[in-house]
Length: 110
Length: 111
Image (cartoon, rainbow over all chains, first blue to last red; front, side, top):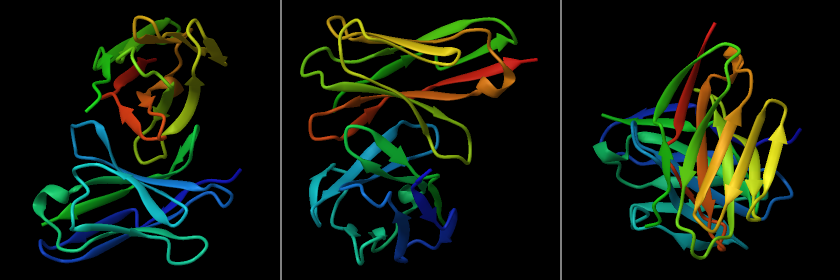
């Protein structure tokens, strides 16, 4: 059964460093998303991506964040200069009416 | 910001007992409601996508109902088993396919 995969499963970085979180969505899906969950809080929408461009983004998704689909399979989330408050579980999803989630990347900013 | 609420936040169930919990959401501009089952370190697993008022869906011992007029959905687990222990998330699907999540109900089934 096709699934969404994410790497790494856990990333530890220092404040101010750049991180790239990687996702491989399900191959015939056209919509891709990033969500995050800060510990103890709700899962929050960050950004959706369709037809090689951002279709919607939340107020969390500021200039420090960017997304890219560098080839036909990967979908990445880049945080340029990480802050302590970026520590969270980041989920990639693909699909539209039905969405399929990856297992998440736990980002720890120290 | 669209407010999706789930209650209770957590519950403990004896193996074999049945249980249910609630998701409430704004009834205006309704498009669809998702239920996910999420175990730690695993992907949230899609359980149901519900769209029609009065909809009832079933997957094994788990079922869900939907009332779009009053803005709530119930998830039921019949004859709970230890493997049902997980966090159950509901999410409101907007017409641009963005999901707004509730905080989840964490179910612990005691053997």
